[in-house]
Length: 175
Image (tube, rainbow, N blue to C red; front, side):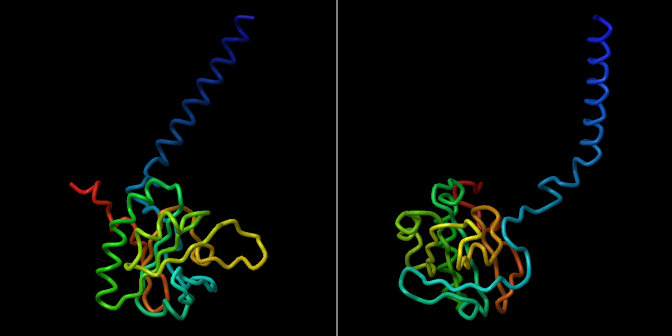
């Protein structure tokens, strides 16, 4: 019995050492420092979509065909809530120089939660769901392949050219 327990323990130890060596060998390839976090498409044209902002404006590929910034925020997301005041300030600055700014708020009640915080700084589009596979599913979150929140992209001539979320740093995080 002792030898069986010893043999199992030895095999377990050898496998553990092999896993640790493998993780160390590949540890820096997927680190945050070497690979920027991308929660949204990093380049290319968004898929076709049509939305209506909270003030009744149509939002589609044509309305963001020039220079634009689109931000995606989820209700109940603490990082989203932290980023919104700074996104709104950046949106006002960009709108003053003629850029289009759209904020997409996702989740039941997101419009009531985030709408007042973004009012006047961006065209706010409210989406109830990001669950694909529904009939007629053409939300902006799906069109931009949003994988996580918050996400902010810069468009040039209607094409995503940059993920700018990390450059809109919440005030509380500034030193």
